[in-house]
Image (cartoon, helix red, strand yellow):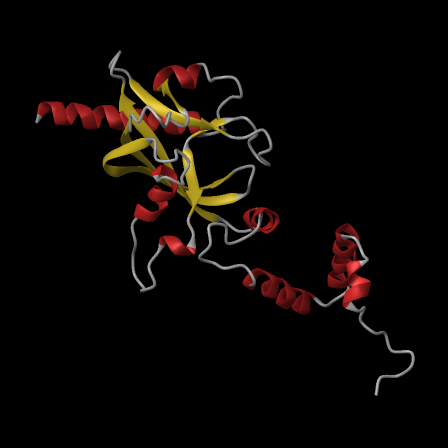
Length: 230
């Protein structure tokens, strides 16, 4: 039998009367009062509540905390084409929303963090088909308004540190063309690859993307020249 002075947990009715902000403050205080190993067990239990095969395996706050501490495995793609009007190389960019926690309103290359669902269930090596689908597919960055021509071309890979935290990133360029559906305008827009590096649009480019665009455009130009010679 519980002692008369033993602290009893609140009832569901009592908990319901406490605001979410107060509950969060109380939970943080309780968690901080526990030994580190117990804190880790509880944190792991919270993470396990989110399905790893979902579109967002971690809610934004947990993702930001993880990204600041452990390198993310990320992939960035440089979507390129030869302009049908000028013949110059163009790059497709999109703009981050005003409320983005790291790069508000900045223009950028398409990229994502690799997720568990991008790989099959068997042990082994996997390509980037699922990752690309999350960028160029109907539910991706470009919402199915760009068609990829051929295979992606790897041109760089590195460990890097950015405003979000450390990352291990592979960079690939892909040739694209607009799907051309009059009922579905293109998401993002094409910019002259050389000009956008020298004169970024209002909002600017995410740090490092100008250099990636330049390298990818050079590789794309060589690729096109070799095809023309064959």
